Length: 115
Length: 113
Image (cartoon, rainbow over all chains, first blue to last red; front, side):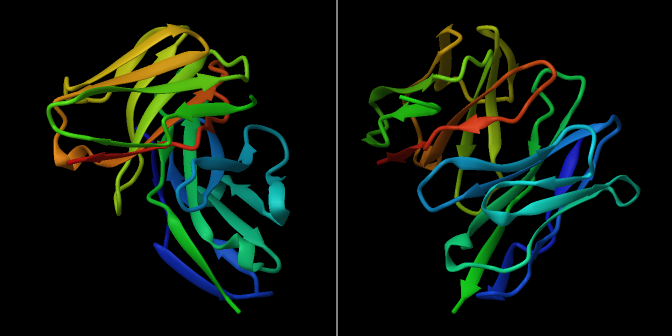
């Protein structure tokens, strides 16, 4: 079975500071990895995904994440936080074999951006 | 319309009512999902449909009844709900094999009184 942990249910950064949201996963087969963002009263929006190939993945809104197999991690970063980045962020893992049945979300990290 | 749409966006119902949530995807995907999102709890996968057949039912109470008449539409029929069923219900779709990213609708905020 797969699982996802996100260290820190709430992260606060100053505007302009580096954003680092942590995600670690466990999977017995090669994973697909995803980051989603959720703004209040909205659905989840895909930020970026890793399937195969390059381990550094760039997404929308200036976010990127690096797949590190040896560390079973897929941390999300952004060099400079903007007020509009304040939202809830979810890491998710799916395996490459099962038909969407093993799509597991982490508990989420709420990002606050301070002026 | 583009992406995944859900109606209604907000719903208030009594415990004896019957209502339905509707989801429609305009992405040509072949898998659809219902999730429940409650405050301070992780996303809970409720149902998965692949090619219009239900492939997963995560021990969801029978007062929730899904229906997938075609690959673009998904319904969640609700009856005799409990107050603890109040939550945001999210629909998602994906291209199923290999499983790609899921694309979500805006959700229906359900309040059971």
